[in-house]
Image (cartoon, rainbow, N blue to C red; front, top):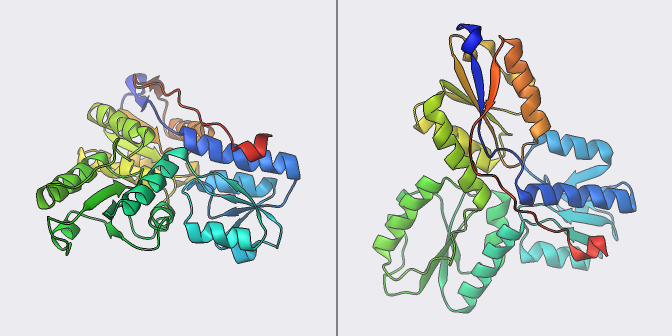
Length: 313
């Protein structure tokens, strides 16, 4: 261990919960308070093991599909959003629905519907199999095509004369998405973009905070679960900036050798990781050797989203 007098943990700002995650968790808690257990949740409410386990302990039951919910049961849709088919299915089963879809994901849903209605073929930049992508592409029956990487652009079978538009998943790498958008614009000069970028404020801010932190540290720890898209992007970004980076979602996953000889450790947390978990990871790092904790400067977020009307009436 380096001289412990000036060994530090630098805390990225902002980190951790965003407004959409906060709202989604509050919706499940509010439903549990109002109606008691069990409250069914379709898919993990947010992609964080710690959060999911905490809600499970309170009486939330996580299901992959709606047929697992008893007829007339109460179900919460996760922050990632759902397709129109899932909505119709819930209605047909007589389920009482509380929708925790992040409002910034809903914005993308509405863009897709409008673009398709206006006769555009819509290209969605995102990760196959991610629930947000499935929900967004499932807003319409047809006419949305997925692009996962830069190489997919050249293979697109459309001509430059066709009406083409694009949207993106909200939790992508800002820089990689920019490259894909540039390639799309080159191939389709008349492509229609969303009025405001779809990558959300929280994803952008957390990536910017890592860019600011990375040059100041020798190793980066990202608090986040393996399923979390935005947390994975933070770890990849730190690595791209030349700093060894590890993602953990419990203190037990930390390895002492990661910190040997490292004077400055950087810590951030994905948008679905609670601050209490981040602090328990800080404490564990300090067990490997004394370190001062220093908060870095950064954007202070003040975005909040209200709960669904049918839950607060």
